[in-house]
Amino acid sequence: MSTVTDLVQWGLRGASLPRRRALALRLGVVLAFLALWSLASGLVVLLGLFNPIFLAGPWLVLGKVWELALSGELWGHLGATLERVAVGFTTGALLALALGLPAGQWRAVRNLLEPIVEILRPIPPLAMLPLFIVWAGIGETSKVAFITYATFFPMFLSTVHAVQQVDPLLLRAAASLGARRPQLFFRVVLPAALPEILTGIRLGVALSFFVIVISEFIGAEQGLGYLINDGRNFFLVPQMLGAAIVLGLLGYAGNALVVRLGRHWLRWERP
Amino acid sequence: MSARVQLEGLHKTFGVDGHAAPALSDVSLEVHAGELLCLLGPSGCGKSTLLNIVAGFLPPTRGRVLVDGAPVTGPGPERGVVFQEYVLFPWLTVAQNVEFGPRLQGAPAERCRAIAARYLHMVGLSEHAAKFPVQLSGGMKQRVAIARALANSPSIVLMDEPFGALDAQTREVLQEELSRIQRVEHKTIIFVTHSIREAVYLADRVVVLNRAPGRIKEIFTIKLPEARDRFAPEFTRYESEITRLVKEEVARVHE
Ligand SMILES: Nc1ncnc2c1ncn2[C@@H]1O[C@H](COP(=O)(O)OP(=O)(O)OP(=O)(O)O)[C@@H](O)[C@H]1O
Ligand SMILES: [Mg+2]
Image 1 (cartoon, rainbow over the protein chains, first blue to last red):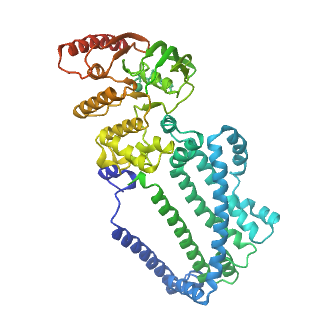
Image 2 (cartoon, chains in turn yellow, orange):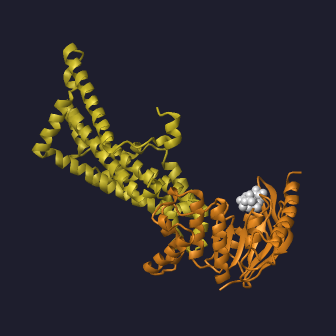
Image 3 (cartoon, rainbow over the protein chains, first blue to last red):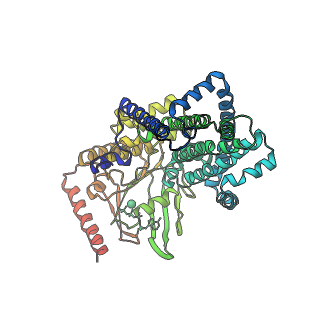
């Protein structure tokens, strides 16, 4: 909890820590978590609470990941998942921008798209997965299309909102400096909407890792989701946890990439 | 390079919660080419509304605005605007903000840089060219906004309390600067201010508006030499005369 003094000085974001201290802090927390986990799995063994294969200790899990990496097996799965996410998410993001940017600006487009989006959006995307499989088969297409479908909604909505909340005074200022329609869009609407669009994109990245796993549970021969499901069939808990950890790291890296890009593009917010 | 602005029977009524809220009522006025006209009036009397209509941001409910005889239908680069709220582009640096207009017109980068440098120097911000607007104080933002408007060389400049956020000293420096530019460039300027001293110092004519809904109460022609002395007796006479009139209006707002 920050003090009032900190709050009024830095806002809810808090003062930025020196880089090395921030890194040390994060590392410390991760190590503490690993220690806690070791302790828990150790206790299970010691007290004989339940069959210890259900809660493998972290060293077993990390060892399994290492082993999969060395044998090369991991890279195939990782590559498959990454490729699906990359293609599906990129398509979703492009669609969201292609439809969201016009919808934010023109009421007619908004009136056309919004009812459809509003009907589809409350349906949990997972409920649609079987349909995608029926339509597009069990192969790559249905998996990629499913990611596109699931990630489209948050990114579309945030894009529409981002455009709509652009301060009209900025448009006035630009217009009275001689900006015409396309210039208003590229030089004012786009940069002014960018912060919120990027927030939507972060949501999209997170969501694509969320949904890919489930579509890989069903009828996949590769992918981290497959690895988890395969582990379940054979009670290979270290494999399940290992794949989950790799997924977590991927999601973390994806998010960090967007955050980094955002920091570069939105330098003006906190120079 | 200057233009004449005619306001013909301007009325503006806002709809607020289904009620009609009149903001301007029958304002007719001719701003001569090359004239600096100051608008004075109590807060809320419709000064910004009037500028917004001339800028082409708002349509008048009735009446029209002509620039050199042609009716205004929307904003345009020949009418530069300095907003009461500054309205800088936060994602551009100070210099890029100032270059915005020339760049839109496709001026070569080098020329844009030269223009930006010149106007930033004029408002005393040369050292801050590379900063972003969030890094500036209110008064600095205001000066960037002024530089940005002038750098686009409009023939008409609409300025809404452009010196409102400045300290007295900077304010006087910029007043002198504006009056110097004006002696050279003879732009047509509509300048909103709450400072009567400022109005008498800068204006060829001072228009005093009634409390809301604004209409013209009185127009003073300031017959003082171009380089004005704030301590000359005639200066003070204008000042007290206008002060009396404005006080009257402000008092009526609180009745
Ligand atoms: N968009 C709007 N919708 C409704 N009413 C408005 C709107 N803009 C201005 N008004 C009303 O019109 C009147 C005039 O406002 P305006 O901003 O022109 O005043 P002003 O003379 O510039 O005041 P100040 O000196 O405080 O800047 C006010 O009563 C205000 O409430
Ligand atoms: Mg105003």
